[in-house]
Amino acid sequence: MRRFAIFLLGILYGLLLTWFFLYTYSRIEWPEVRAPASHGCHELGHCPIRWWAGTLLLAYLLAPALLFGLLNALAYHRWSRRKWALSLGIGTLLTGLLYLEPYVGRLL
Image (tube, rainbow, N blue to C red; front, top):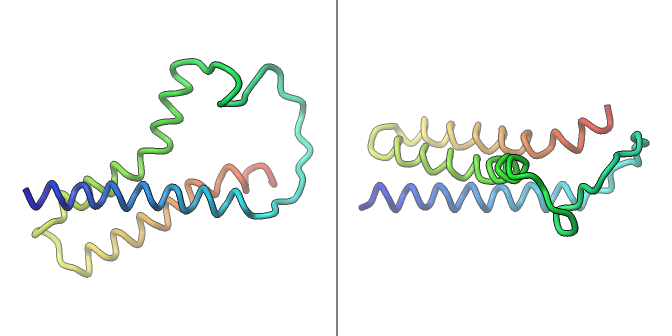
């Protein structure tokens, strides 16, 4: 039961981290990038999307939460606090880079 609670805490941490990075990066004043005109409708709220695009979007948003949950469930009572903290720190850094890439990739 405790391992499941730790798993849920990892999921909560991953979801909050995802929200934090997406919120923070969306508020930065990024320079304007001239891109070629895209064809079709690509707005999530206004246009229907294909099933595989929706699946990829959900995986992109939920992957850090699931990975942190699994990390917590596997590390509980098996890893030292130092190893656990180091893994969470590296995971946090990688999550930040995962969500930063679409913004920086357009600038290059």
